[in-house]
Length: 260
Length: 260
Image (cartoon, rainbow over all chains, first blue to last red; front, side):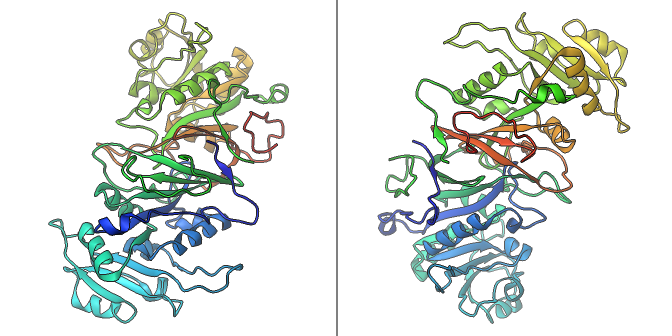
């Protein structure tokens, strides 16, 4: 079935229908990742994803955030650039921001400079048990800090953290906005359900340093994806993939769904 | 305009119309690059592009080759895997292979093991002046060897090589099949016109070594692209980009052209 044009005046994914029935049976949230990539596969320009996306991409980010109970961001991504989870829209006016969930192994998270510029922004920091008490106290000025156990490698046990998010914080749908290290950890541990990718019409190449792709880490084998939908908006392509083909029969359609 | 579905029984780019009028005024061929990429931007699996593409992608490769006077391949790509430029098709029967143009700075090109398995295959090796005479003699057993001058950096002067291909070998339309180093050299020297990319529905990540993206090298700034067409075939996306937006008003349409 063909990809659909983005209809004038509406927006990609506005009618997105994420799975409902998974809620009762799963011990973790339904996890969907959203990233932007250049045509040569780079996820950042000069260290920042914001160097790649357009206005259309930012609208898609807001739409996906509005479908989530919380938005997860790795500490490295938050160190790299200022973020705002605002959903404010010219059409709908001010909306409450979704809960921000920040993962940190060390406590080195610049909440004040890079995230807390909106008083309405609620923040949950999942902090590894190994991080110091001073860092926890400092983060506690802006956020709820939850200690989570590490794996034997000393980093946060993501499977455990996900269970905490669902069982103790009622997070059923979790949007992940990277970066590449967090994406890799979730995908390689089989903790992600969908991957949304905006393909920006540009080549980045190597700049001062080599930018990562959307997935920074080793896979023991290639992972097959199933394309659920594809939209065009100008020269940009918006794609939605299922990460575990065939394992989620209850994935809901959007208006450009290719599977219906 | 929407991307088009690949109609059953036909093939992507079958009605591709590359520019005609450029022939008279340019001193180099019209250059179009064709690559395959995973969703996380990798151009190879275990060092080979053939690990990524599907049957649909191989059909697109044959279609694009049939539109070219010659197919250029970097020596590194030919060292990495066996290649066949066969156009043979179940529908049309045997066709003569396009001329293979191999670029080499050193003469280390495994023609016999990785390319010459088809007696009909004609080969032109563009060999840097700095390569040894023994290598040239060895390559000459299977190919026409043309010496080309190097740049001050000691690598083949691509702009000069392109002029030689057009002026002395009547190559007006040149398909480039990479690899990533050759793509980068052509794009950064402003010697490429279009970029065809197949987007394969898989994640590769890092395997034994880190695979390159379709573009391996530095760019001084990001390069804007213009999406000319997009097709879907199953879970694969086939995209055609102009590398110099606005500078090629004579780019011909294909049936999914987005610009008309």
